[in-house]
Figure 1 (cartoon, rainbow, N blue to C red):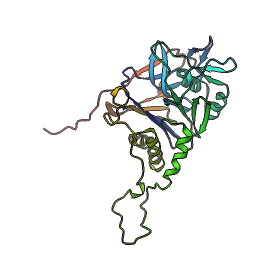
Figure 2 (spheres, rainbow, N blue to C red; figure 1 turned 120 degrees about the horizontal axis):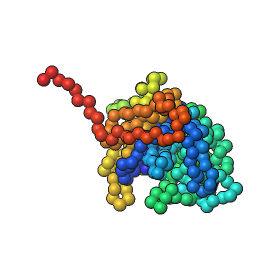
Figure 3 (cartoon, rainbow, N blue to C red; figure 1 turned 90 degrees about the horizontal axis):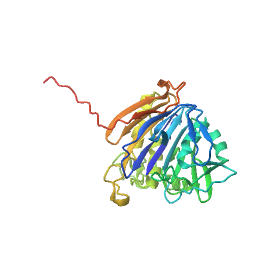
Figure 4 (cartoon, rainbow, N blue to C red; figure 1 turned 180 degrees about the vertical axis):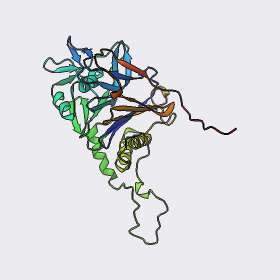
Length: 326
């Protein structure tokens, strides 16, 4: 299970929540003019824009979980088990495998409008990356500085939804989450005075948030992430916004032991990240290292490069021990 958000139309990112560790996860830069062989055809995809994102590399192939391109277009795949459906090859369409989808969209499109146009001719095909790496049932959030959409491939085909909240979690289908928000119209960060009895007193701040879901289901996380994001305040400088972004993600993070999934395995937030539209920086922290790490795409020279640039994630806790006079 996962949660993705956009914040102030300049910051995008997600929690990656899984029931298993990802020891091979990396921070990956794909340079423009890098070539990807399509699985469903003999054609190749030439990457048009530099990409930075998180995922794993298998046989020199970048399997992105989420990424942003040099134009500031962000895309993340989130679990959509029980609803996602991929199809057979359609010779009249552009046949893209799910594991190619982020590379294809971010490698070719500069904004959400171009994504919508590209999706008119895309068929997501049910071909696995390999015998050992099967397709994951996913839906996707795509955002730029102006708008956000959700892409779902179900038995009804590919559907595109305008994402007015800039939030995505998991099941069920996205229209349910939009409809469900009507149940929380009463939520407010402001203290509300009692209306029906002047003898009542306000005993605590936050009473107007009574009813805000506190569970860890995808439905509860969608509401809580949306409320927290929409009421959050931070100044205009990048560090304050990045700091606030991680606090928003913390409000829906999975703590090891609180959710037990399949095969009695603990689900936890493997990592949280934040991409900056302005600086093209990927900030991240992992479950085992709370320090915010960062890599700026602008600092990387990708000219004349046809190789992936791969960076290990900092997984070891980095504690700042205060010095004493002893």
